[in-house]
Length: 130
Picture (tube, rainbow, N blue to C red):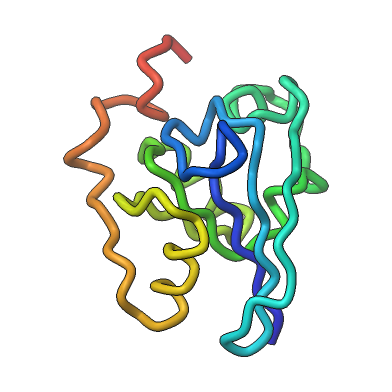
């Protein structure tokens, strides 16, 4: 089975928060329990999840809707639920090193944070009126 894992990386090296604003993602291709590829994708401003989620047009071809798992330092409940619509499981992690996070995910030791304790109430946790 092939799995794709996306990780928010604003600076292209560390796991960053606010997935909605992030435009740089590391994409790990996993076969079995082995990392077989790691690539960086750069989204346009229009493709940022915040813009995608608040745009009334469905975009099933969005590059992040092809992954199985998204790891980030921050995402609201609304974003998590919208990603589930595309069969993407999103998790907030405290780990900042993407390679370490993926290895911990694969060996079952990655710790997930509760999004309810980290985000303000509202649709996506961004604080905007949507």
